[in-house]
Length: 332
Image 1 (tube, rainbow, N blue to C red):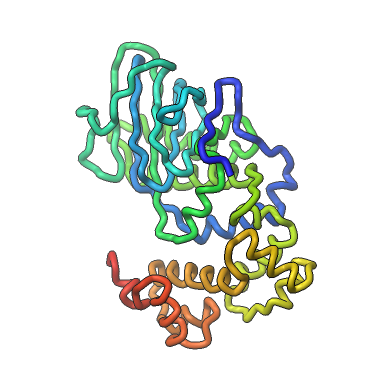
Image 2 (cartoon, rainbow, N blue to C red; image 1 turned 135 degrees about the horizontal axis):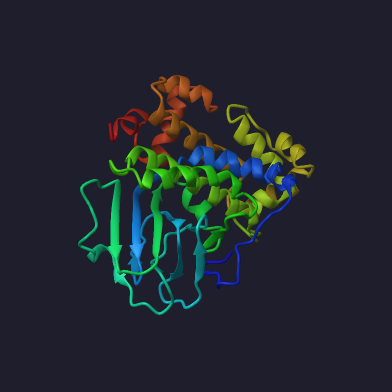
């Protein structure tokens, strides 16, 4: 599993060209998980920058991205010399939001972005920033993301530390319309809409992360299991029907393995037994429904596969430290 990879100007992020890959069990499984994890935008900024400029971003959120709306720039991880040069329509994803530098050209002395007095901070969620150095113009969308899901960190740990989705590469057509919307929003005389930016940036992030996960070949962890054709079908079954009382025999049959081979293979990749994974998945779904619906605790318990509200409540409190009702009320 790569931890710190940047792409040189001549390099591109790995690209898949087969439509079959987009319809594969791996793609389906990744889609299921990303739909459930509900990554949320934490901060959004539209920057209009005229060279010379260079800014250092502190990281510290779950993940981040930059999308070039106009012009060009380069991005590199702090302490590393390799960089990705980006043009209009390109997106760089930082799955673990390491400290990094964004600049108009190599060799610039970067200013910590938190020290920039000109940034409009009236809206904590969405902001704008203009820097006029008199040179060529670049317009950027910058966004950072969080997730309350325990599984989120395992997902973002799989790709390289920096991944580029090039304009015109496989999968970029899915984000082109979103980037056009953001460009139009960026030049509105009335200012940037935080609602539009939030939704647009979250779509860009999920699409870029999906692309990155599809292209990574992992040796261990969740993504290795997602790439294992035998395990993928069992995981899809558990995700699709969490309420079903899955037995080891049923799951191993889905994987076309003996029960022992399936159990050992599953535990090797995921560090959990199939039963432990299924319970964690059920509790993740339940947490999502507690926050997003007004369904009763009993109905949620049955929907995700528990025989009773009391059994669900005990399992939920063991896992989260909160009762379902207390969990639901936090943040209301």
